[in-house]
Amino acid sequence: MSQHFINNQWVAGASGESIPVIDPSTGDTFAAIARGNAHDIDQAVVAARQAYQGAWGAFTAAERGRVLMKLAYTLQDHAEELAQLESRDCGKPLKQARADAAAIVRYFEFYAGAADKLLGHTIPYQNGYTVLTLREPHGVTGHIVPWNYPLQIFGRSVGGALAAGNACVVKPAEDACLSLLRVAELAAEAGLPPGALNIVTGYGHEAGDVLVKHPGIDHISFTGSPTIGQLVVRNASVNYTPVTLELGGKSPQIVFADADFDAMVPVVVNAIVQNAGQTCSAGSRLLVQRSAYEEVLSRLSQAFGQLRCGPAQMDLDCGPLIRHSQLERVQHFLQQVQQDGLPIAGQGQVVPQAPTGGFYQAPTLVRDVPVQHRLAQEEVFGPVLAALPFDDEADAVRIANATEYGLVASIWTRDGARQMRLARQVRSGQVFINNYGAGGGIELPFGGVKASGWGREKGFEALYGFTVLKTISIQHG
Ligand code: NAD
Image 1 (tube, helix red, strand yellow):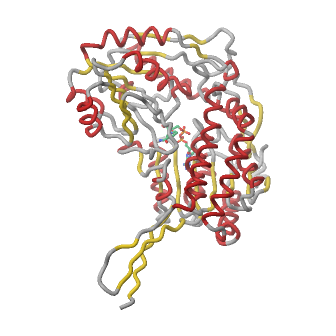
Image 2 (spheres, helix red, strand yellow):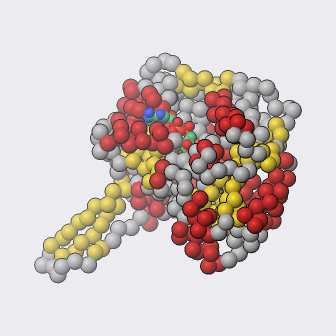
Image 3 (cartoon, rainbow, N blue to C red):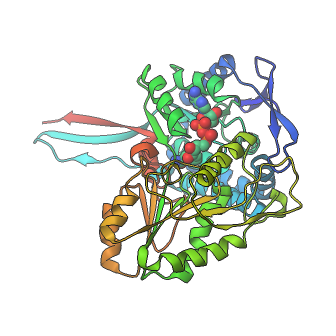
């Protein structure tokens, strides 16, 4: 598989070099991907431009919808194969990988249906004029995908871009490419013309860097860390290339004393354990009203105690982290917790069958975390939940907004007026009341404020981001 997919063909990388693919469950190398460079990116951008100006650009909106729907059905037929690939490559428990495969099908289905419903407006203007707006594709869009949800993030980003009529060049994360290479091959089988979708694998600072700076790229959709997001914005600005940024989060779950605890506990646990906490929208901060703090902590401590972590194929509550350096990063946070004397209120276990070379971290609940502590401020990207008390609504809002992030929040209360007051005061792109989406919901616009990024993906809103608005004014007397 160590080749790129350009112009509907497997293409050897110009460097001839490859990057090993490691199974996070065992630490073993089981495949290799091509180490893309400037030549490979250039080839992909040229292919995309030709498609945009040629066969793909000539598709009507309805024809685009039809081929994307065919791709959705093709992905559906291969969902189990994609789930198995994703599970091995990312260390995802199978149920999670299957959910991701189902999600990419749904993304293509949704955007296939939306392709011919992307309408402009007419604007009331002076007498003798008709003014209208057109939504036109950017042209060639670049997509930089992280390793935590390759299928899902590809689906929401590339699905929308293709539906809007763009031709795409995708640079997946070096840790997780296999499923996306297979998706590109299936897209060709489904009838996407050559060059409409191209994938170049490689390192971020090599292939990714070149893609962002390439003058033939008309828009960049970046999903990843805030640090690299800022770098991408700086680099893209050289060519005035617009960027959509989907970055991290430190999303609060705010639990009031009147909440339905039975409903809340499994959702709060899942929101941090899902994908081993490597979810941008993980519910990684738990804010509990002081009068209910001990009861909620006691319930959660029990729930954490039952969690089991192990190899992807065992399909437990939690799989391994993506790579060794990620495990070290999470362990570093926990060392700090220990040094600072913060109490561990609950912890799952790594099962004895877990291979010693895998990257396992037992799910951990830390309580009484000060608002300004690293664990309550920084993204751990592991299965570690920071719990802290609050006194009243004002205190809850103050703490919820006291990080640099603003991606998702949830509010658990039976008080309807309070639900709406808080939903409006919490600064985040999504607010869930008595539920938590953890990034789910293909139809729901998703994205952040502050360090969580800008622009929206998912839903119909994403299509606007993958188009440029043109205003046409006709003077007809
Ligand atoms: P990362 O920023 O290191 O890498 C993301 C992608 O950027 C990868 O494909 C990588 O190869 C590429 N990249 C790295 N350096 C680059 C450069 N100089 N130029 C261009 N591309 C470059 O992040 P990661 O470790 O892959 O993912 C984890 C981070 O992503 C977390 O912070 C997480 O919160 C965030 N994330 C956000 C969302 C979201 O939708 N908001 C989704 C998933 C992950």
